[in-house]
Image (tube, rainbow over all chains, first blue to last red; front, side, top):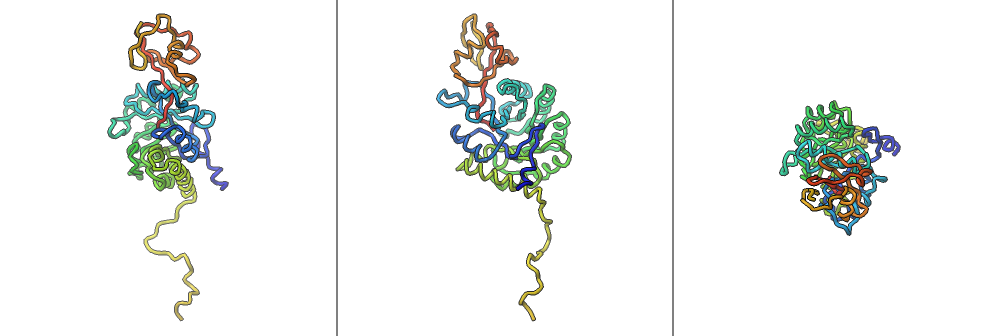
Length: 265
Length: 66
């Protein structure tokens, strides 16, 4: 549909057709990762930055050979960082790794049990990174005031969690996400929490600009099929949002005319 | 001399550079980034950046993550 094609997602001045961003963690192997990304239609793909002695199998190709930066927008994350200093170091390493590419996903976590964002450290890191020229897509809580602070700092996208990372519990506080979207001038993405296709559609129907997920796809029994389901859910949700849902009514409203029935006289 | 590489103490030759160390790590064509004592060492400077005793080096790459 033409409307769909005229409806790009714009992040930091760059235009994308897909509103589904996906992570590359937790897959069985790089081939499954590659197939899932293809099935999802995602154009922005997150990666983690780790010491070379971690995740290094000399027999396996490099992730960036399989997911080429020529084909995808690589979004390095700061997952695993629990303070601003480590997150900033990780982003600088990522920028060097990606030959100066400065789009990053900032996440500074509070603890391992909840992986809930530490917003104090997140704000500190965002401030330093923006001043250093990074384009920061920031993972945060669904607190509207924190979202405002991060937008004021200059983050290019605000990404509140739907629920805890990897929990698959869906969007637990849609009201807060709505409040964040009401005032926010940069794209608001739901990042984390989506468990299945309907939940991705819900996020998009609410008016979120995009959805970022990893576990919902990688943790499915058939990740490639789920990646395709998510692609359709995000597209369907976006179109439903643009179309505008019918008003909710308290009682029935017949779809067929009541006149001219054979019932009665 | 001793340096710290990715958190481990290792022994390197006195004239070792960032480039010779990376070559020794057998990373093949892998795309890596290097931080030396908390400062990024751009790829173009790997060969001329010499290591000294006690240096702390991080060599990272991209792996799957969400």
